[in-house]
Image (tube, rainbow, N blue to C red; front, side):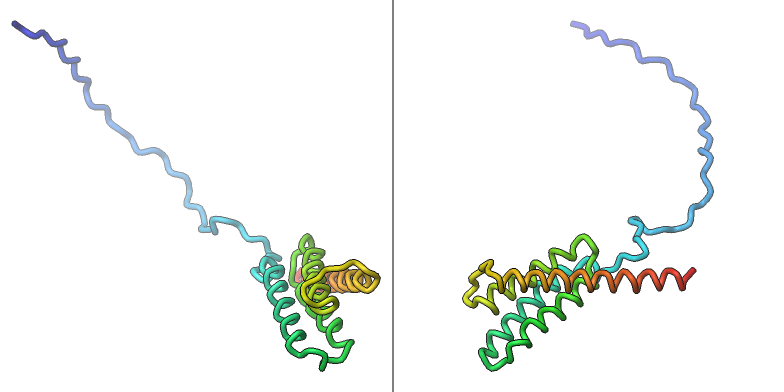
Length: 150
């Protein structure tokens, strides 16, 4: 029994391949463009602020009642101002809220109890105003730097 195959197609002549025109060499640039005002500190301000607030609450709890009463709110206000000055403007209220959660839960009420009495609302307002002051101060410094660079 014979097996018949199709005939092979005729071979085409080899075409001469010409190299494609190349574009002019582009200068090297990073894969992801980085905004001029963006730094690692601005991205890490919230986690570092949370760690700072936790460490401050722990230090105040270990000090017990020996620390004077104005020291705890002043320390949390200073911590909030510093980390809100480093943070992006969108994250500033969250920085204040995290500071308030540690201050209210561990310093004012103790034993991680959150409350919303008059004293707690006052502390939240103070921390929000401190965060706004830190963010405004940082924005003013950035504006002066931009103006002097031009």
